[in-house]
Amino acid sequence: MTDAWSALTGKFRSKDSVDYTLLWGLIALGVTGVAMIYSATREPLLNAGYNPHYYLERQALFVVIGIVAMYVISLIDYRRLEILATPLYVCALLGLAGVFLLGQSALGAQRWYNLGFVQVQPSEFTVLILILAVATYCQRRPEGLAMYDVVRILVMGGVPLLMIVLQPDLGTSIIIILTVAAMMVVAGVPPRFMSFLAVAGSAAVAAAVYLKLLHKYQIDRFISFFHQNSTDPNLQRLIYEVNNAKSAIGSGGVRGAGLFHGLQTVLGYVPEQRTDFIFTAIGEQLGFIGSSLIITLLAFVAFRMFMIGKNAKDTMGRVLCLGVFIFFSFSCFENIGMTMGIMPVTGIPLPFLSYGGSAALVFFCAGGLVLSVSRRTSN
Image 1 (cartoon, rainbow, N blue to C red):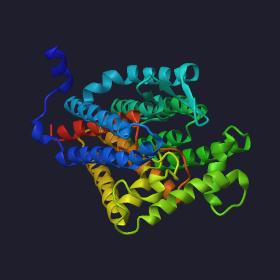
Image 2 (image 1 turned 135 degrees about the vertical axis):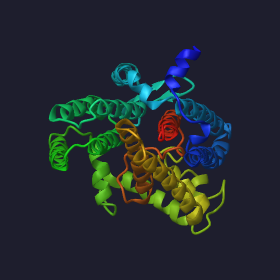
Image 3 (image 1 turned 30 degrees about the vertical axis):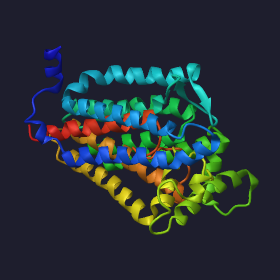
């Protein structure tokens, strides 16, 4: 057992070589998320006669498990994970396929496994596994990616992407496309070929809309984004959600109403406020100052991920960190943007701050991978 662990961890200078600024930044986000989820859910649960600590206790458990997983992963030499990339990728595909047979439906989508005490969303784990698989493949091509390699990466990302689109899960699909594209650029794919892929991808999206391969509610979300003042009754529900979200954030003013306060939050005017729309509770209760501090913390974590990737000693480290950086950064931008009406509603959680066991574990594990790279940048 000791020999196996030593083989996985490899050699590194000492525990002091880890990027502590990123480590504590990730922990601070997790703790802040627990506090904000509790603040957003305590009063509504009390008013409904339920245990006011229900979401607090569950999210705190998710965060503790996530921090432990992050630390363990940070000890493992990321280069030794190459042997696990293919088995994990196959497990991800099986998990996505199984959702169609055993998954639970909710809000018009079938993308979760209900394990009783927790719901597991395999598509979120698939993004991280795909990042590891692509980084591993690029590491095996130190001379650069040939056309054959590009096709293989596209197929590698396209198979899970198709299954996720069918669930349907548009937000995760967009993340996969952006993440894989960015990783290919870092791996050395020529810009002209990426431009061709961008045009081809845009044409594919247009064809999907024209052929009605996307669900109506997904199309309505994009239409409502461009027509936020529309009186069309089919779009009013989505516009109503976004308008309430913007109203909640705006009502916070400079200093906010304070934790456990705020009319929109306490009365539950904003749907899914503990998950997709958690930033509305942050904006209403902490105001401009508190929201700015949290955004600054998110930006700092993203910056450290980018810098660790930039300083990585090999292709796998660079591609891996860049993939996590895009995954994390776009999730933050999209989630906060949709609550402000500057991005369409896609159901992407806010990393470390939205309620959910799958999301918490995935982002902490992603942070662990980047910390693993930081431990070995000078070896």
